[in-house]
Amino acid sequence: MSAEKSLIIRILLNRFVITALVIAVLLGAWIIFVELNNDGIIEGKVVDDQGLPVEDAAVLLQEKTIDSHALKSPLRAQTDAQGNFTVKDMAVIEFYVSAQKPGYKSTSKFAYHLYFKKQNYRLPKPIVLKRE
Image 1 (cartoon, rainbow, N blue to C red):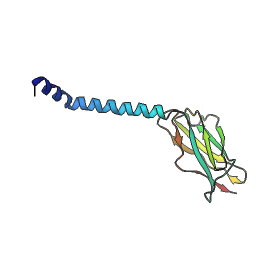
Image 2: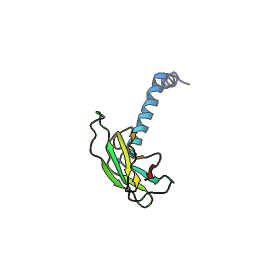
Image 3: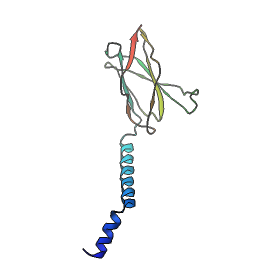
Image 4: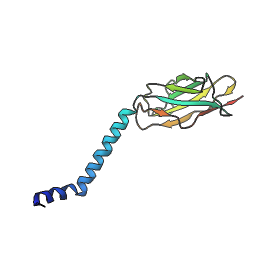
């Protein structure tokens, strides 16, 4: 092997070069992930205490601001026949979700934190409404 090739291999195997390359790859992967998941779509499901979907429940999504006492007006969504709801163009980092429907007790607010604004997010578990 020539001295020139040996020098190039030593430079490429240098821990500082490897660290910089790993950081660049991770940063590139994060940018691609954000670009593929930045529509601001929040989805979830509302069920009753027996696990059955609740149709026409009102779902309130409220942005949490830096001052926890200064909440913005909530956005409203209605559930479909399967209890699913969708809200589009949510440009938030932290938000609260609650649900209500006549004949059911209103839920308390559940807080969620996202990694970036306009992140697509599906609530990890359904919102449960209990009958009155």
